[in-house]
Length: 136
Ligand code: 5GP
Ligand code: ZN
Figure 1 (tube, rainbow, N blue to C red):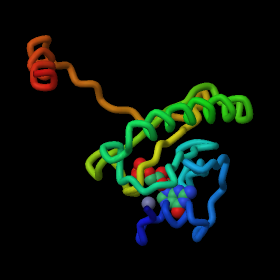
Figure 2 (figure 1 turned 135 degrees about the vertical axis):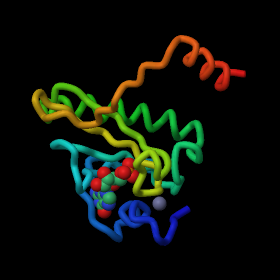
Figure 3 (figure 1 turned 180 degrees about the horizontal axis):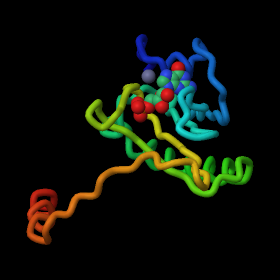
Figure 4 (figure 1 turned 30 degrees about the horizontal axis):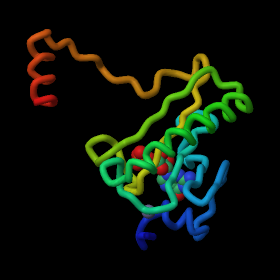
């Protein structure tokens, strides 16, 4: 279902232009207008779902199948050296457009450090406590 104030719904409906790399009845893959690297693309489901919590399981698995296909094609054409797959859920996680999307970010040798996080150093006891919270 299209959402009136959603920029990605408007792109999918063709109301806002985009550079489209791939399209089928379920997905559109477009170039990001604010790319982290050359070729940074977004997989958009045509149906509006705010995030991965809302995405149906079948669609979620189809997104990953398409990501794999796009990665292969983009690696061949762009000669990139690696890929980051990024998918933000919620404002606190950096999500700015609340229509599910998966970032496909080609990486090139010496393209600079992007997407770094500072690794913590929890004790084994702390890790065990977190495991307990999640699994019990
Ligand atoms: P998020 O931060 O929600 O994970 O990512 C949103 C992404 O959408 C950003 O990388 C941003 O550059 C991209 N974006 C926002 N508006 C537009 C637009 O109108 N067209 C395209 N192609 N990308 C957009
Ligand atoms: Zn939408």
